[in-house]
Image 1 (cartoon, rainbow, N blue to C red):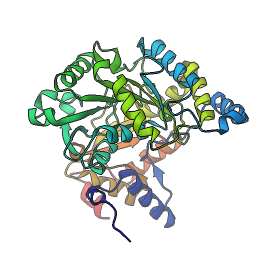
Image 2 (spheres, rainbow, N blue to C red; image 1 turned 90 degrees about the vertical axis):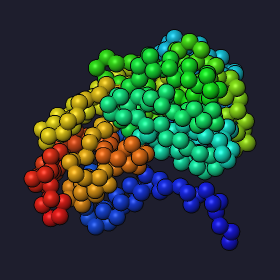
Image 3 (cartoon, one colour; image 1 turned 90 degrees about the horizontal axis):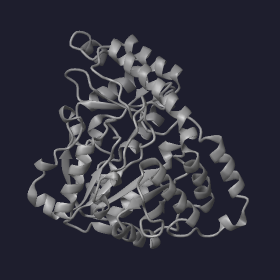
Image 4 (tube, rainbow, N blue to C red; image 1 turned 30 degrees about the horizontal axis):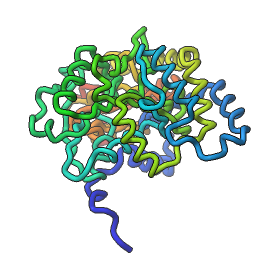
Length: 401
């Protein structure tokens, strides 16, 4: 039996697969696990979308191979949504493509552009797929640090000029996973100018554009003048409408990048199931109403958990977007130490920050994907085990008990 490609040996364990293993092992021991790990919404897909899917699946025409680029009506719905939501005009034929989720689009974009030795500029901390799929393709991921002191906006001027000249793709993601950070107009313009200067594809992963609170509205990078020269933007129905298992998204932007992505997809997959695209069209048409209650629920959970952590000494504030909290680990602990402590002492699963890149060390992420009662219970377990942000006095006893 031949060995797999050597690049697989260079991959770190996939963070969320490892979390699944830990959850399964703990549950096998009878532990009541509260998982705040994977960003998989616990709330159902809005019923109108489910009903539209149920109706569409009865249409025999949806049982055939879907159009590779996405159905005409789905691409038109995406174009109309971009116009209404962001006042951004994109062409449904040359600048729009359906995806089997944004994760697929990200991986296939890397496949379209990266050969061994090519550079991809990967923010850190960030969604692990940017870095990992670059490694799979034999490319060189170059870390672009994002620091709390800079509101998790990278300093593009600090990127080595040689790396910038070799780079094919710059990944950005705002609202941000894992930090919850948001972007400024000034930075968006700076990123577009940077990519135009060095002839780099700017891939903006806009998966959390509609998961916002307190009146905040996330922007599109395509609103920046000149962005279409370099930018492809990807949207996901997973978090917008709680459709993680449905696998649907779309890409819009630079026509050359869309064509390259399509060339890979045409030879790799057969597109998103047409009935799911039909259901997605309804979601886009009714997005304001369908996301309103979801965001109210997530916003309330955010406030509850932030307040609870504050009472335990954590220096944390409620951000205006995503259902993630990005919090520092207690004094003197690594991110893996703290994640292990929460699992072993409290039955709580959180991802350690270093799983999102080297700059994630010293933090942990909370996914607010549990009902308020379970979030309250999680906070009580932390409190009952004497875990506070300043563990200098009680942390050692708790950690070794």
